Length: 233
Image (tube, rainbow, N blue to C red; front, side):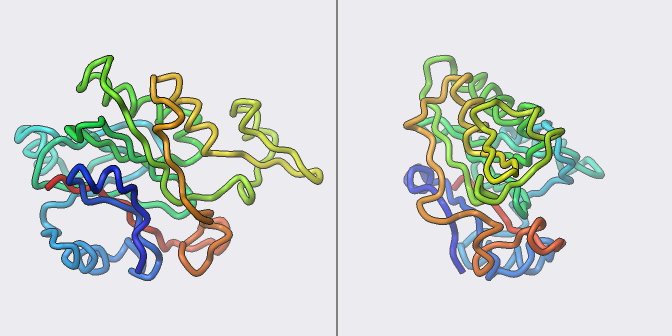
């Protein structure tokens, strides 16, 4: 089992990453619990969402936030802003991008589900703005874009490509592809996150290309998903 993560987050005491398909589908609570337990994390302290490809973000920062979360029957959102220690959060993906965003002191960390609909809707920008409101206008923000479908394989039609920036659309051999990395980076840059502070995968992390490591809905039409998580010690 491999965990794709950013050492900058780990060095801040934030256990995090996107887990390869070796863990089994993250739709199975037993698989999720097994991975968390292996990392020394109590699964009861890690929370999830009902994702809808939207742009809503749930705060989990105070004791009151945790009470509100636990009292709700369902939690419809596609992202988190975590500040409370001793808690963790997860999102699920199978081609969409997990976006990790944090301040350089590690006071807060955001984890968001960025499919193409969420990106078009402004999820990366929303996440950066939510974080910026907590840490102030001058704080340094850092980002890591986890494994997702790459520009090599994310083929779309005109009705989708027209919703992206021109620099994120690639046309080759009569086909149209979208570069989600570029679009996310553009939104983060507009929110004040410098390009050099945004890290992407260090080797082939295209979920479509790399069947041995990742589930991919587009490739296999599977309901199996990967888990991405953050946990503040």
